[in-house]
Length: 283
Image (cartoon, rainbow, N blue to C red; front, side):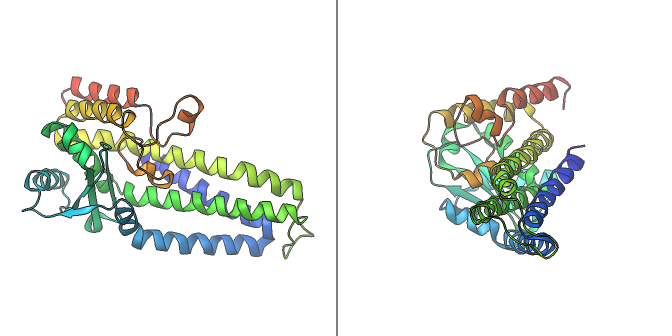
């Protein structure tokens, strides 16, 4: 069900992008928008992992350098039936972790120094199992594509504001776009894209929690880790970019009230409750 929901949401993102292009420039605008989306997704497919790891100054760990951490990743990958991903440590006190890469053969798991200091070994392995499950479920690619399309929609919305200012654009099959309609698109489209992107990310987090609990065999280790990470993030300085916040196991950007409606992650209480239910059934 989660896989189907994700496919529908990604299709909605792509459809929204093409519709905006059509409203701005007619049929030609739709074709240009489609072409831009293909180029951006191609770039995201090949280079997103390198960009994210460089952004956070992640240092690669080999078996001799970080033996315990590497063995955890190796064990979780083996349980998941995957090749061992590259292992990185991010130099920050914020306790968190993320996975990236286009497929299981080109993947990486990154944990922060703060996480290694905060969690017990079994809890750290639960987090790693969660990240390995993202790789197994191809979430690393899905999240990147969703973020790329959402970003492109914001770019088109910016163009729509200019088109509205100059009285609307002219496509090849219409007499011109309504400036008020373009202005409405410029306001509504980025919000709609953000909501869809958040829905994609939230559905994948639930699936990663469940799969990660199965991989490590200890749902409560992951549940306890989530409690500690959530508390740790709340008391540490935010060191993440909004564009990559969805990659982390715990939302690194703090905020309450209305901000929770636009969170890239599902409610922590619900995630923990689901893991506790899995532990109660002997999973």
